[in-house]
Length: 347
Length: 278
Ligand SMILES: Nc1ncnc2c1ncn2[C@@H]1O[C@H](COP(=O)(O)OP(=O)(O)OP(=O)(O)O)[C@@H](O)[C@H]1O
Ligand SMILES: [Mg+2]
Image (cartoon, rainbow over all chains, first blue to last red; front, side, top):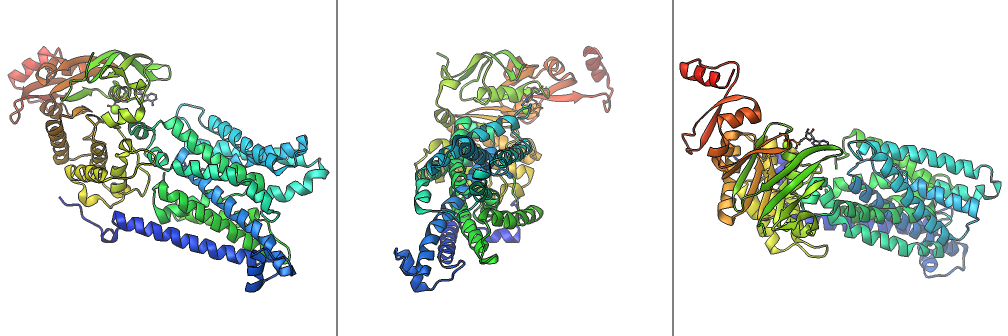
């Protein structure tokens, strides 16, 4: 009884072909990201010529255009880093919770980071970006624990639906808290507002570089968790049977994700949908193996955020739309489309 | 010191509900053991407790005299494999990828996939006749095909001890027999100790060296199929009358259930039913 092979299966990639396919996919994604980065430093309120870009990139500030380029470099860098961080964080959280709806935004983790930063600014007079960073990470971590605890109350543990509900409720509560804290404080409202919507526009090189160590740790932990996530994907029992310490695996992977989205949020404010949409699209391209999925999500997230930032600069010229608004505007309909097209895979 | 897998005064359950009640068990080494019993009597729970999935409330599960909760998880997974009753796979995963994940206990964080891993996966696919399915998505397979893929994954783990929870559900009769033949081969060729939950008493009696009948979290009877598969035990464990005859193919005992209908009332049968007190 040989199983009948459906026609499209005849073309199914053999393992080594899927490996080289994935490698070329990664290379392609990298090339697209590079082009987007070039566009990002050249497009803006002021368009610049190639020679001006080269001059600006090499540190010259002589003409206005060259200065504009050197201003756009840190924001592009920040968009790349934050986008990659959010893409990977979303991917890891979906893996840890085996929840296709998991995302630093939906689980309330980004809002938690934001709340912690706002509290720091409003009540403790915090102004050093390094403090933003730490309070963002602590806020993200505490919120993750909180949401997971609430979501796993009851007999059947942390089901995807309960987690999403707990996260969404937390996110709504925390964002009203943020508003409640900022509203009476005219002195800090303006500065917080653009941060809170999610922006890379105000990026400086030193601020961007300051989150590098944390992001580096986050990326390293996440990538080293890829194999654990592959086992968690088979369910708790199977993962245990295959020798994984499930609780430890979940905790380490989640810690990596929290470092990533805490740091990204601390610098850019909460940015929605990147962590949700990117991993799903990458799953369609790269399959279910987290060792591929995570690098794809990093490149995808970076590309999406850079593109959203460029778009925000073009559509409202000479004004700018914050990147957080653009990702929400693109992300929401896009996500509805993939859900309706049943392209969201069960994890 | 006891060799192999043993349970001592094992008490386990979920939350406050105790399912296993001071259970003692010695899994015969190098043999095939079947666990039989009514639905919800605790067979899966026993298998979970034997494989570190469920922490005992009291008592111990020992592997070669060592508490399995004190053995490093990966080291344990190299010795003891498990196929749960209803495993889940992420959508879109290919058979090859899934079976390959069975090799995880043999790999560290930084160790690469080796020739040895390739061979183990190839052998597992071969043995379960799933080579042709290797590049298909697991969620596109029929229930029976999927079951064979899961067994392939357990085989790829290459453990000396294999616990399987209802490995033959979803399979047609031919594939049931093939799976049991396969496990028999594995046992004969590698000396793999096999413990499985089976619902088909006759296949259990035919293929297993050792039979365990459970009722309400306790071992009701255990021993050879001749010793365990009796009309008396079937009535006590399943609450149903039966006749035990000799399996014309294997010579082992074979159980023929007696329901309320479709009973040919020959004198012999009447006698049997009266003897059952009906
Ligand atoms: N996760 C769980 N949480 C709470 N109770 C459970 C859980 N799993 C099983 N039980 C209960 O434990 C008892 C034993 O269940 P178990 O799954 O061990 O039965 P089983 O013998 O394998 O049955 P079946 O033949 O139907 O597979 C049942 O009463 C069941 O309701
Ligand atoms: Mg069961």
